[in-house]
Length: 300
Image (cartoon, rainbow, N blue to C red):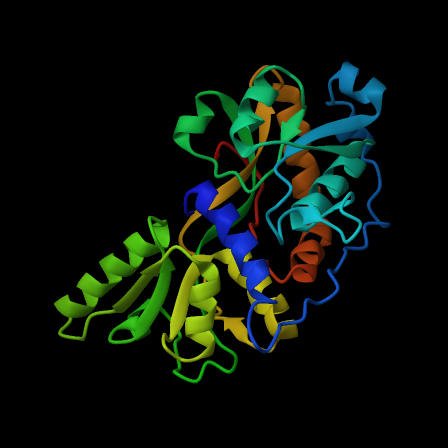
């Protein structure tokens, strides 16, 4: 996953790009998942720490500006997104209601350590470094994906098809590094190198792709899916259907002192996977490429 700051900037610019061209894009009405069938599981609820159970709510720390994972509805107050739907469903399994707090991404782990929140959920990668401070219940696999013009006129089906083609990436991102590595691979195979366009503007990258100056944009999976679905009301771009490249897990952060809560969340997530609710949520937000089959704590 690219550095968080770049992801946030990319998303803000990407959404702004929808109205910045001479042919303004239209944004589709955001979807929502039907969670009415999710019921409390008494055995899992019994694992919830008493102070959380008695409060009846799961305090969720997030950075609510990262569609389609988490963002505000048109009222500017109501959190929505794939992560919002999923944590609501997990909370319901535990007999709780999710209550979101919007905060800086950099403060999420500290807020968890100081018990200002019970969990964090903000497209945060589960890494060995972060595991030194908090535990993670892994719920999604993200990574690099390829976005192309609608209809995929240049027939890009995977990384090897980028040889000799123009590819736009953001400066300093993991996508830039991958594109350079892929270019070297192309050359080693006797193929032309990737024609890399490195910018600090997702708006510019999208315009390059729309006008055919590049054949593809490399981006984070959820971001690419959201832009493809909303830019031009879904008429401008599409995402190449392949597993995330260099994929890694997103994790729900839990205080290390709260091992039972981690187990409860893991159990609730697995139950949602098993009964199809998880699949429906990811389908609603069109991010099934990142689905997992088994819930895990710290990757285990």
